[in-house]
Amino acid sequence: MAFMDRSMTTPTVTPRKLWFGLVGSATAWLVLGFIDLMIVWAQCAYVPAFGVDTPHAYARTVAFIISVLFLLVAVTAGVTSYRNWRALSGAPDLLHTTASDRREFMAVLGVIISVTLGAGIVLLALAPLIVRLCVRAK
Image 1 (cartoon, helix red, strand yellow):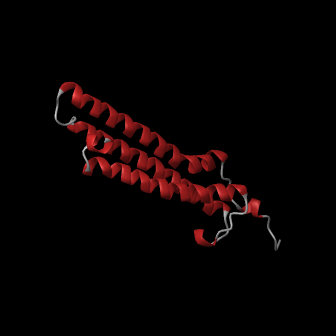
Image 2: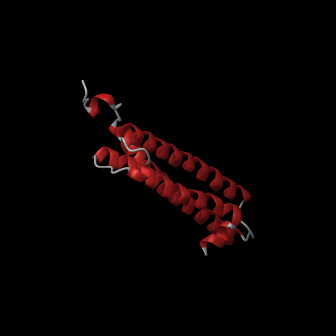
Image 3: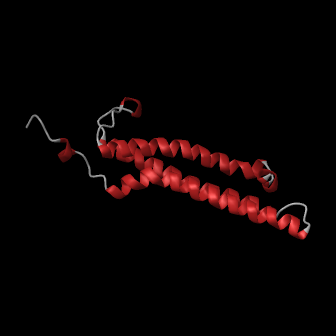
């Protein structure tokens, strides 16, 4: 048979993988922002209440470790989206994709979201290492 239906040759991409690739990085970035806000708020509220000059040193370490964990979630979502796109697309690379199918569009959008919000997570991870927590809150 000279012409084969593409759906017969394409491995199945489950909706669960598509949605994880699309919203995984965004959820990680959003939750990390909230946790970062809570850590800074708790530490800076602690400083004036007890007359301590600086917040606990462990807070910076905890914020960094949590950031790295959420960065791993974003990278996993990005890799999942890329694999979904490779399974659904016939384009040679991301720059030449048309993403005409809804599932292919979701996969490409997941890659773009993962790259941009992954960079945001890296910046959130580096901030506690460079700037003191309570200085960031002012």
